[in-house]
Structure formats: C-alpha cells, structure tokens
Image (cartoon, rainbow, N blue to C red; front, side):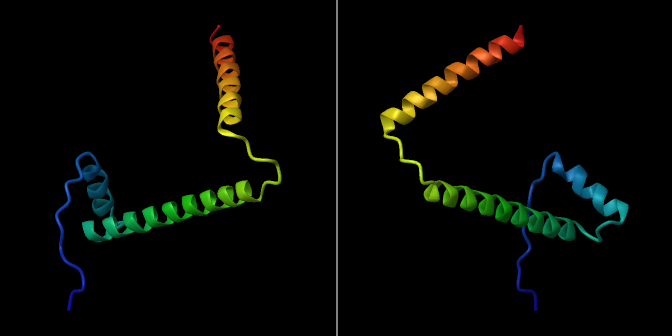
Length: 92
C-alpha cells in the first residue's frame, strides 16, 4: 500500500530540466527526479546548517569581549566607508 500521496507541482522553467533527465534515461520517472532533487536539497540544507552552527559556536566561544550596539554600529560604519572607497577606486 502506498504511504505517500500523489501531488501536482507546477515547475515552470525547471520542467525542461526534469524532462531532459527522464528522456536521457538517467531517471525512470519524474517522481524519481523530484525525489532526487529533494534529497539534494536536504543535503544542502544540512550542510548550511552545520556551517552556521559551527560559526555560531565559534562566535560564542570567541574570548574577545562583546561589542555594545553603539560600538558595533560604529565598526560597521567604518567598514562600509572603507568598502565604498575600495569599490570606487577599483571602478576607476
């Protein structure tokens, strides 16, 4: 007995990509392509989450003192000013 239910999905431009994969013989059906795509999305999201967790952990473990909101704002303003100057110089 089937444990999943059929669904209808409008793919737009991605329909050609799905059809090409089925026509090439790489997949037997559109359902197989969609399942593979969802597995790939799950892997990608898991990888992004692991990177974010590592960055958050590194930030939490950082021994440097935290900045106040005013200090962070001032630091960002200095950074944006220097980036803006660098962009203008590169454009010349």
